[in-house]
Amino acid sequence: MIKRLDIFRGLVFIFLASILTVNSSWGQISQDIKVLRHQAVPMSDGVNLYADVYLPVPEGRYPTIVVRTPYGVQRDGMHQTMIKFAQHGYAVVLQDVRGRYESEGIWEPFRDEASDGYATIEWAAKQPFSNGKVGTQGGSYLGHNQWAAASQKPPHLVCIFPGVASTNIYANWLSMGGAFRLSFNYGWGVVRMPHKIMLPQYWHTADFTTENLKYENILRHLPLMEGDLQSGNEPIQHYRDWLTHESYDDYWKSISDEERFDQIGVPSHTYGGWFDIFVQGTVNGYVGMRNHGATPEARNGARMIIGPWGHGPSKAFGGIEFGDHAYIDMWERSLDFYDYHLKGIQNGIGDEKPVKIFYMGINQWHGEDDWPIPGAKDTPLYITSGGKANSVSGDGLLTFEKPGREGMDEYRYDPLLPVPTTGGNNCCGTPTASGPRDQRPLEQREDVLVYTSDFLTDSIAIAGQVNMKLWASTDGPDTDWMIKLVDVHPDGYAMPVSEGILRARFHEGLDKISLLTPGQKYEFDIDLTPTANVFLPGHRIRIDITSSNFPQFDRNPNTGAPLGSDAKTRVAQQTIYHGGMQASSIVLPVVPVR
Image 1 (cartoon, one colour):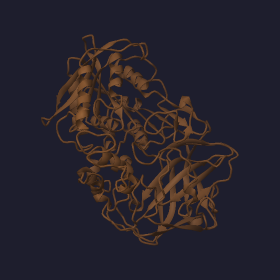
Image 2 (cartoon, one colour; image 1 turned 180 degrees about the vertical axis):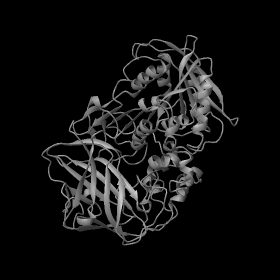
Image 3 (cartoon, helix red, strand yellow; image 1 turned 135 degrees about the horizontal axis):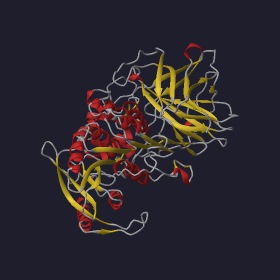
Image 4 (cartoon, one colour; image 1 turned 45 degrees about the vertical axis):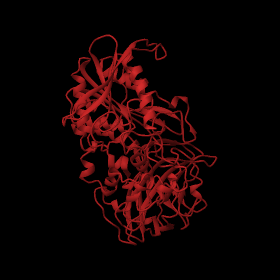
């Protein structure tokens, strides 16, 4: 397979070495471009990283865009995208990151991207094809690369355009609320990315069609620390390192972009989707730059767009049609951004509102003055019941009035019978579907507590960070609390609009492990994903509470053992409290109805 791939790439590269003529199919552009193949870019330690350089045919010095990828410079339409930039008067440096494809060195995810990005930007700015003004481009891992490089203050960097990207690899990539994102981390970190060249779907001899090697069976293997052996019979060091560093320690802080926002002095443009796995990074990137950017240009130049998408723009997602207008061509948007900052074209970006978000429910875009939305009011809705909120057939209620009477609900969490992942914020080849998928099949379970409001008579709009104040106890030293905010449509469709999870051992902070005292009541502070939704008249607001969401997150064995080390599990008896002095509530960021 590798030989066939190399032959194909070789033929493509021979083609690229010639002058390319592309007709008017892209915005009436009809420019020839040229490609300089396999250009060596030296790093500070002597390692050479290799790039393809796309250029307009006329000799000259052009504003330059740097793109650094671990997925191969010819993957997924990259070539066509770089051609378009060159046709519009940009030089483009498209590079394989350290240890990937044609570049030298050893790839350790995330850990060299800051210094290598700095060196590449400065190399590009000093080439005869560049006018010294450099911007960066790309989404997902490529977006993180931009944040990392920008934090090193490259003198020739002018602007960055990171999309669908994490800004804290621990807190909004590897985990959420300290719970390990199993299906994504395993699928990306073990199955797809451990070696120099990413092979389609699988690597080595792993056959995911056989019974023993079905993906869902592999993800059930315990202990997690040996999970890498199940698909390829080979230990993957970075995966094991991730499990070993289960809290937000110096291993993670050293590569966190959020620790260095105050070092970034250039305008940024983030974009993402309400159902993207990295939506928190999208928001944190904008907020971090708006509030902590190193220069007025960085703070005033921050921009953000979030649509009803997953890991990229779309018109429909997760079974819901949001309309043709929901899609935004982010390449066109990035071109406008570069034209404004790298060419000085006054196209209005400097005058527009900095935030553009899509309100689900009414399915409309709105420009906002900032994030959090100015004037948003944190509004609690309280859970209550007669003691039997188990499943949608139970008596769980959600109310704006704080219940005076104290009560509780109980359920049994068995890690061997977890609640299956259905929709939500997931991504990228995992075996579970993402997005606003109907939650009713899950809400039939006795280990899911369901609290539903009355039918609404007026619209309620929310935009911002959702938070759960949960009073709860468990009979062991650790467990998970999984929360979903659901918009129940008149036909019963239960559409999730926000979700959050907390591994209870992190109730004092993600950088501190503190096991629980069995049976003790705690107030847990659980952040859910940011969202924007209008709950319409005739709809109901619902909260689902449980202790698992597998395989999106690993199953907490309830033992208190270090992450990935335990092959044993125990059943946990869970108690949720409400009313009186232990009034559990979901706090919604309510804004004026759009």
